[in-house]
Length: 79
Image (tube, rainbow, N blue to C red; front, side, top):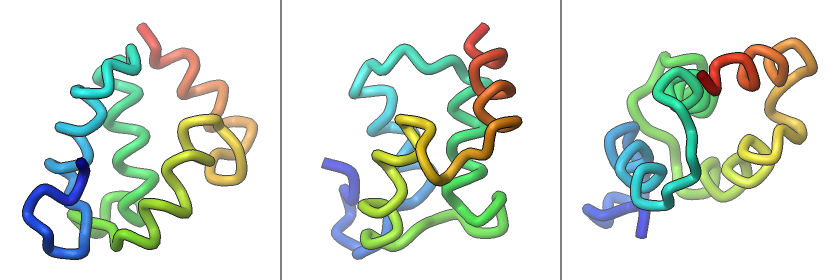
């Protein structure tokens, strides 16, 4: 569902498309913050499948990946 080109990595574009399809109600600001955080602070344009599986749920639930300040910023970005 996420790695649409079977590259064994999840690109930013693939992840963005997946998030849109999931209709999570994430604002564009939240999505940018989420994607940046999951791609090594924007230094890469992809993540491995293992990284995706490890971080996706924890990032979405604000566990482990986000610190307290980032949680507040993410909530404010909801728009």
